[in-house]
Length: 603
Image (cartoon, rainbow, N blue to C red):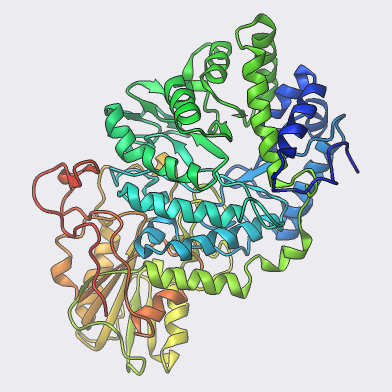
């Protein structure tokens, strides 16, 4: 279908102001219903397909676990294309923006390349690598028709008890800013030129990493959050110095969409915060793109949903994620405009911002999946990039002549369920929202990688519980215990105690008894309390959440590549040292940390 606003204009670039003219012309043709539909974002499982056309819906998303059946790249492309076809049937043929949380690769798609979570990339400290990861992620997304990524997270986490710590690059705002810029550039390319660019979404604006323990009022599926969606209690000067800094950098790098946080700033929900959203972000920082809400983000503003709509739109929201009840939102917003509670000028500004981005993305010219890129999903090239990212992300915290391990070792004991579990390696936001244990997507486990690296794979003995009943005490030169956290996401990962589980501690103790040199590999989304364990082990490796390419861990353990990663977060000695204070560059509790920010041994 050809619509009025397709070629001959070139997508992506706007050297003569053509996009602004196209937006102005299109806006002048739109009814109020068409305008309001454009600023409405719905989860794909809640939409009636006919309403995409009838209500002129501007955006759809797949929430965590929002995959088609079967979950294959081709099914994703077919699904998204079918939604896009519905949008193009409307009177003006304005294409949809379809979004996903591809926060460490297009990881909701079975078979996609799953990169290390951002905490690992923060340890690697390599902007060029992060930019390449952004480009690879964009290619895999475009293959499925998705041109909008709800990433990168540019939070500056101050409290590692937060369940989203692993989504943050670092506690250091300058490192966060540098890697955020690289990721935005990788996703968007050079001003969206070409057909492999997707829209980046720095999030969650602003201060989501500064919430106070116990300040959250959110309860979801029986889980009471402690930090996630809580209240950031600090003055504006501190907010600017630490948490606003990465957004300024991302905007300068070309970010045209920012997602607003579900958290509050000194008691006021961010979705209602006109001073921060409009006066600072749009006017002071000159942000030209559009602001999108988070999941049901306007709901907590007021117990009166109509008031919540009015407050949020007037505060500066341009597109509202109403994943389930879009009819209620559209009906309420229509009344608000007709009554004059929301000025039509505010609506026109929001719609213009959304349309401008759609034009810059080239969606009017290329709204569908790029089938030629389907082979890029989980390609050897992308997996090699992920493997390199794993190598660079590993942080060596202790090494008493245990590493590197010789490849001709006569007996090697491997223990811990995390040694042979793709789901545990990948963590949250992988296939499902909360992640899942087991073979949830193709990949190479750490155990697979070790077996492929030693000269004789038969010398590798694996026992998840570390029993090794037939091995005498000290019978093996080296034992490896791979331990860590179960998958989680968001507030489900808020934890008051970051000690290793009793089961993991038992595995470490059992392997310790069976070997001369014990190596512990920690799979986790944050530093954990290991102070009393360190004297019992000969080497300790923080592997974070490495994703699908466990071979990268083996590459470094056996000395094919050196350890180069450095801590992106200060590692506490005890829980009473938390939280961190980025403004003063120190833990707030008594004593020195177990390991300082930037620590990392080499081999």
